[in-house]
Length: 512
Image 1 (tube, rainbow, N blue to C red):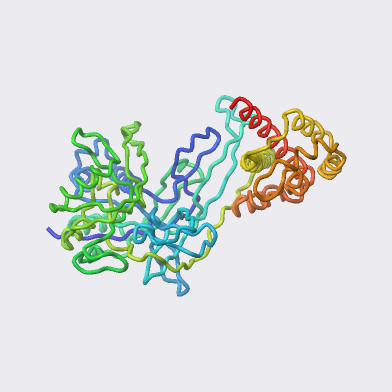
Image 2: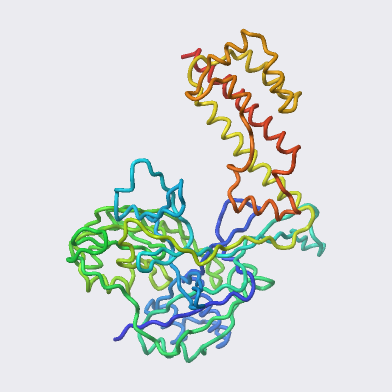
């Protein structure tokens, strides 16, 4: 039995919507990849349609290809093109790969080294990328927001004021997946479907979403690409005998009671059982998630499972090179034929990584009704205002001693509401000496409260991330920074929360 693979490219011919639960009833967001479950379901559905099957499970080919688990369908991830126009397949960025908050061009792998520096703070890089010769290439997925009216089925018209929106993957992008199995079965499958064919997948695929072209890169199955990493040798920046395992897809592990779990000890035992060796997890970056699939044939959802999320990674000792090759081919855990449990070996081995970029993805906005623009602008303004108010609470907490009286804070709050920012600062200058003394006595370590109230500028530059700022400009040409009325509102919102927090702190101080 010879296990091989077919590489499958999926080109989006229309926007894609792979549902991702956000908890917002008016927002349908999308995943940024095409799961192995969807790839399997698309091919299975096309087979049922072509063969006109009522009881597909009784068909020999259907049972062998889609039900037996002998053929594994991996997730399809975004493909980028380098400066020579050559396609480059990406993987989920490992959780331990993080960037310096102060300088986003400084990239570290925290699993390889603890010597990042005590003064350096890092944050995770989301999305997809590729590692090659010590370089890290980052690639985002282009997405759009499309606004829709809710339809009144009984009247055949749209419901007044009922607007929801879809986040979708843009058309014109390419994703790549692998299908692994016995060489004979893969040849039969490729011959049956042909080199290229069309499928509708994802949500709302009966209307404007989900049209895609599937294309087998080669008609003949090829060897499964695996990394050879001999743990007995020093590898990259790791110690002798160490190697990093990276999860390329969500992984489902069962404990001894048959329940899915994300426990690191259970993961270690699963690796030991799978490889048949006394492997130990020395260090881990694990992120947990939940899996719940809808099976259209059943018209039901599968029971939800706890999973270790893609991008999780572990540093292990005591591994065996040949065993690791088999792990990369066969996967780890449950439901590997649906794309779960894919593992890569040795792709992480540098403590500090140089960063490159294929080019930034963009979030575009589809056609919207005028009412949708109003709702979107209100949502963005509310987001900015919330961030400003959080800053006010944080700034207030820095003033910890000699707090002014509650009555003085209430007086300033009343004065603020009836004045613009310039008039309020003039009012501060006119305060009596006793009030000024209270403000000048209160200090945050850098300046006293009177100086703070006089010099504080409330703006939005640091509160809006680049994508949100661009989004603002795209909503009916709305420019938050040029809206003077809104800027004044932010100023008042900031100090209303600041004064309220100061009164609460004074109350707590007195009770203490």
